[in-house]
Length: 184
Image (cartoon, rainbow, N blue to C red; front, side, top):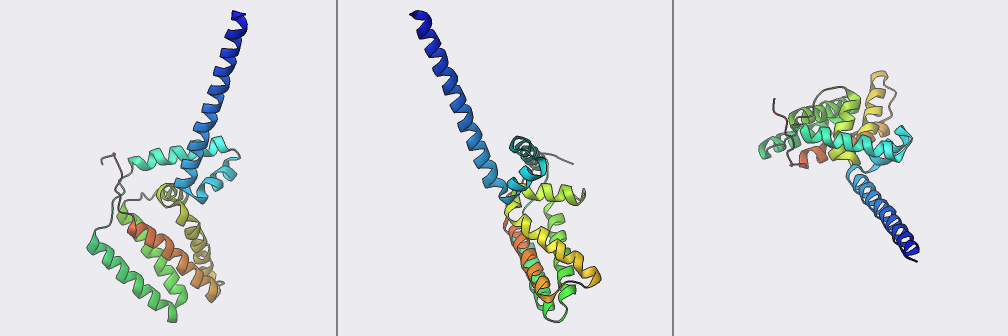
């Protein structure tokens, strides 16, 4: 009889441990989905596995914590906002130039915030940590931007690109939380 009780207790403990592990995994997955937004599913698709994607996203978050991302001071925010308004006005007469200028302004804002220039893919990974929901918009804007080199983008596509750039621009400008432990 004592052996049966021991086996039941062990079985209950094993099941409880498994259930606790599943609950921890679900919370972790929910936390990552919330933090990264659509980037979570993109990472799952790219890696082919949830576990690998979650490890990748955790690695991005660890790297991001070491970056010196800083907020934009109020007066500089106002300067950026004025520059954005001029670019929007430019769109009426020169839509392709406005899209190019919007791209350059967003790039300058990223640089001023402290995002390192280590290539396109790394930039997207870094942005995904804090701006995952706006990143899909940025990718769409960049696709249209690429179409401007051969003038194949329609006015509607250019208008969409401006809206997409604006999404990331607003997100970058409004995000005032500094990061970083690395000192240069």
